[in-house]
Length: 100
Image: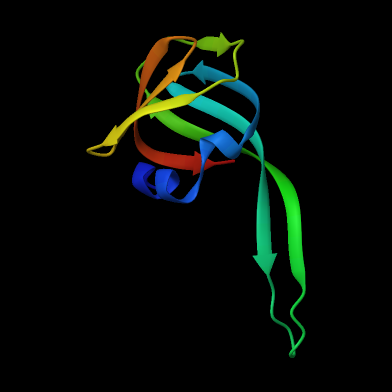
């Protein structure tokens, strides 16, 4: 998915972040977040409200590092580039976002 789609459809503030690290110029953000699904089946409308755990992978140009802090602040989002702040360190993310 694109960064713009990620920013418009996911709220990092709602994530329960488990781990953040950079490896091979990719930032890995492992998080648990809530999803709500409305299903339709033969006139019956079941609902599902559950937590899922996913890892979002962003492209970046930074050295390998494991972050101890799990607080992320989105500083800027424009021109298909996302700037975030972790421990007063600014990181530029770009390209597409993978979910694993």
